[in-house]
Amino acid sequence: MKKIIVSAVLICVMVHAGFAQTAVIKELTGEVELKPAGASEFVTAHTGDEVAPNTIVSTGFRSTAIITVGTHEVTVRPLTRLSLAEIETASGTENLNMDLQAGRVRVDVKPPAGTRTNFTVQSPNATASVRGTSFEFDTRRVKVLEGRVAFRGKRGMPVVVGAGFESYVGKENKVASPSDIAESSFQPPPPTGSDPGSSGIGSSSRVDFPIIINYPGID
Image (cartoon, rainbow, N blue to C red):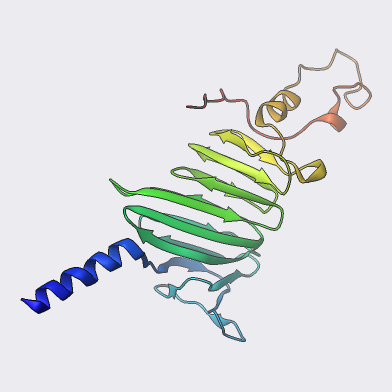
């Protein structure tokens, strides 16, 4: 009976304190290396390797890695370096934090049924926070593929970027409004016989983003 009581108490402590998850390399191509916390050198990564918290993942030229964390997936693009700072689940809530030092990642956040996920990707320039979406992030620019992302620079208020829209860190380390970017990227055709580069709406002022999509409302 005492053993049963002790076991129950331990289970309760684990539930409230939370437990760390481990990410796994699902696929990789090219040169992918890992540097575990406390290690002095990088080692070659292989499919199936575990990526513990605070492990640095580095990809070389024309190299990629797909990392799964439970139901979530992170695609590490070429010439990227990142670390999984926190991977923890407590009381039905997942907390996943990544530090993107350089390069670009695609993140697909798919919370399991009945679980709330807080997923944050932080770079030296900006922070992208989501609860269930897909997006690409390259330390300064975010492109949302599904759902919505709260995007924030070092200064200013965060903005919500919806599916099909982009934002980036601009002047004074503040993020640009997705609607302003959409408006600046839409241009009528220039008058016949005119030089597109000589008018105020010419190619020199164009922002080349494929973002002509209706912006979803904010709940």
